[in-house]
Each structure stands twice: as structure tokens, then as C-alpha cells.
Length: 165
Length: 266
Image 1: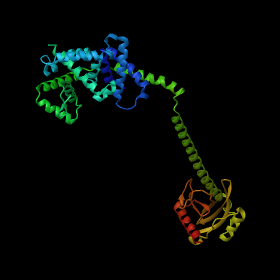
Image 2: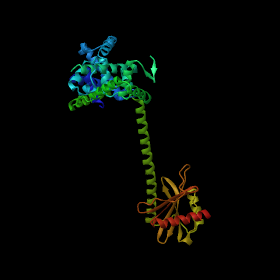
Image 3: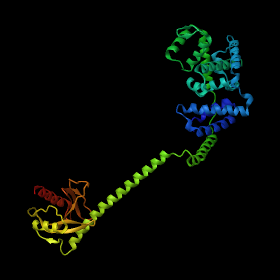
Image 4: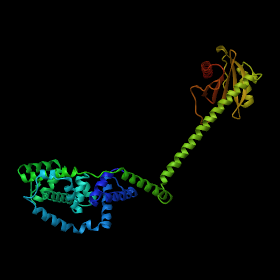
């Protein structure tokens, strides 16, 4: 099974746990094999990650309903984060050096605290290395939405890391 | 939203482009434009540096190792899934008829081709074998010929009278090949005329089989020597010729050449 490491990393960030990620990827692999006929070409990694994402959210809805931010909350979320962003605009944004020095535990915690719609975009981009277009196709959202979510997600992470000190 | 140098003036949209630049998602023209803008805007430069720093920090996070145990789990799982799906799929519904048809076709071609090859080879071998036996019998028999005559004008009518046909009968005595006579051979249940020549103490039997329509012509004499006999085969006119002897195949080839030259001249 190719792309197993990618699938595992993505599931790990979505579910928040290594053990849960293995269960999710296992189920995703089963689904991938069962649905191999529906694979209509294109990037096989993005295809597998799409399945991992769907399985992850189904799994979360069943086992960790409180951890999941459903689509309906997105508008509120945007307002919330937008406010936060403008609030932390000038003096508190940390220097690049501070971000670079942030320790792995703090960064992981910050990513894990991101709401899912932001978390998945930043993980797909910066951990899995997918292109904007691939992410947009995977999530079924416009390119502009991917860009704004990524920008928000990174903004949140930056201010989070800056407030550690 | 007004634009300047093709760039959005809105701070939020400019932010998106900074991220896109860091991710290598901008075309060269837009990338150049935003770099120009950054030259006069330290805030943008600082933001860009933060984005790059964050990207580096995230990508250097430890990634979960794919343990061998997990790999094995997935391998077993997917093998199991494949094994479980296959029989039901093949038994019901999605049976692949094209694959089946292709396999039948291939089998048929291979089988019939093989049969043809085997039977045609067998036929050829048995034909040659029968002629070799005929030559052998003629050597063991009291006389190798049924009609003993060195006169081709005697041999040819005799064959015509017996089996209704006769091959061109050439007098090659001046080349050292003495016509001993003719006989009737039975090859493949059919009577065929045979001429017998003698070179020194050796006998040369020349069997002339009437060619069947559609049979492949062999204009150039073919050396089929086997089983201790020299055998040369060719076709000319209405006959298939088989020259067989215990002389060397090069000597037999010489006989064939002279026979063919004489027949062509006649």
C-alpha cells in the first residue's frame, strides 16, 4: 500500500491520536480496495487522503462527537478567527525567529487546537505537501476558500506560538 | 477592490498572496509584483518571514512512523479483502466475458496451430520415411525395378500403362547416371511412378508424385537428407520429385541438377 505514511500522518492530525489514526487508515484502506474501480485517475495520494478524510470524520462523529466542528459552524468560526486576527494584529505578532524556535510540543498542541476546517488545510499543505488545487478538489471548495483557510490557520498558529512567551 | 500592479489593495487578500508566494503557488508575474510591493513595506516582509518560519517549523515536526506491525496489518487486511471479494465477484455478475473470450480464442489458436504443426510435420516425416523404406526395399529386393530398361522410351510407356501417368524420363547416361528402369511405388496409399538410376554401384530412386492443386511449390531443390539417406525434394510442372539415394547429398544434388536441366531442355 503506497502513501501509507501520508495517510497515517493525515489521520493522526485529524483524529488527534496515533492509535485512532491506525484504525482510521485501516478502514480507509479497506474502502480504497473496495472502491478501486471508482478511482478515475488523477493523483492516487490525493484520492487515498480523500478517503482517509471521510473515514476520519465519520469516525470522529461516532466516537468523538465533541471534537468535531460541523460545517454549519464555519461562518461563526470565520467571524471568530477574523476578530482574533485583527485583535492580535500589530504588537503581539511574534518575530519569525520566535516561531522558528517554537518547540515541537507547543506547535503540535497549537495545530491540534485548530478547528478541523483549518487544521486539515494546514496539514494537507504543510505536512502532506499537497498543492492548493489538489486540496480544493479534495475538500470540494473553491481555491479562494483554501487560500483564506490556510491564511487563517497559519495566522492562528502564529499568534498561538507568540502568546506562549 | 482596486488594484495596483495587478495586486489587491486589501490587506487580507495581500495576505493570501503572501502565503501563496511562500507555498510556491504564484505565477512569476504575480510573484514579482508582490516582491516589489514588499520592498517598500516592512510589515509585509515580517509577515512573509513568519509564514516561512511557520512552514519550516511544521514540516520539521516528527511524522508518525509506519510501524512494521501496522504495515503487516494493512497487508493482511487488503489481501483478505481481495481474497474475499474475488470469488463472489467471479461467481456472480461481474464475470469478465472479454477475458474469457480472449482466453478461449488463444487456446483455440494454440491448439489448432499445434495440431496443424504436429500433423503436417507427421505427414512430412511419414512421407519421407515411406520413401526411405521404399528405397531400402528396392535395395533388398531381387530387382530394384519392375521394368528393366535403359531405354527411356520403354520405361515411360510402361509406367503410363500401369498407373496412367509417367514423369519426364531423361537419359543421363553420358553424365554417368544409367537408367536402370522404373517401378511403381505405393506412397501414402497411392501408386506413384519411380525411376531408378545407377551411379557407379549406387542406386538413385527418383519418385515423381503428381502435385495436388494448391500444394506449395518447391522450385529450389531442398535437401531433406535423413535416416542415412540423401534425399532431395523439388517441384517442377505437374510433379513433386523426391530423389533418394545412399550417395552423398552433394552427388545427389549434381544428379538433380542434371536431371532438371535435361527435363527443361526436352
